[in-house]
Length: 208
Ligand code: OGA
Ligand code: NI
Image 1 (cartoon, rainbow, N blue to C red):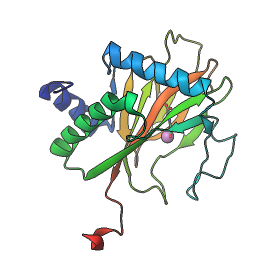
Image 2: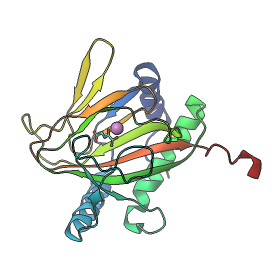
Image 3: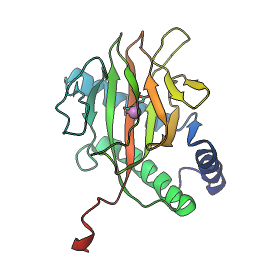
């Protein structure tokens, strides 16, 4: 089974290679989007999302001024209702490996919920302690987002800023090492699945 045709992946990967990011609208099928939204709603109802941390020393440094989201790390083993989402991510990774020659071995992702009035200050996703993050991806789950709701992703380039609205079923994929970005303060609760494609864990090579 294949989620998208080869030439569609090639086009996305070309954009990623030339700009360091690509924006993809209507990424999931409507049935999968529904399943994901349903899963998110259940986790919120069960109070499963926890305040996110920052910094490389584990997720213990909580600093609300830097980052205001609540997260739930997804598990490929336990969160079965998202298995199709994991398969689709895996397919995309296979294409990226084929066309970009990146050594991606795995991915990790979490649900993210930004309450009204929160955001995430300007940062890079790859840093000391998190240097295995190769590509970042965010799938937005904000039905009926409109101008004024805030929570845009702002990409900072040398001479300009690019504002990306967190529209429902929009995926953004970007280079974790080079793309400086921030989440503008949101005026509505803001939902997404945020994840990272990871390279081989360094230092384990001797294990074969
Ligand atoms: C992050 C991040 C961007 C977004 O979690 O590191 O930058 O648009 N998220 O949610
Ligand atoms: Ni980030």
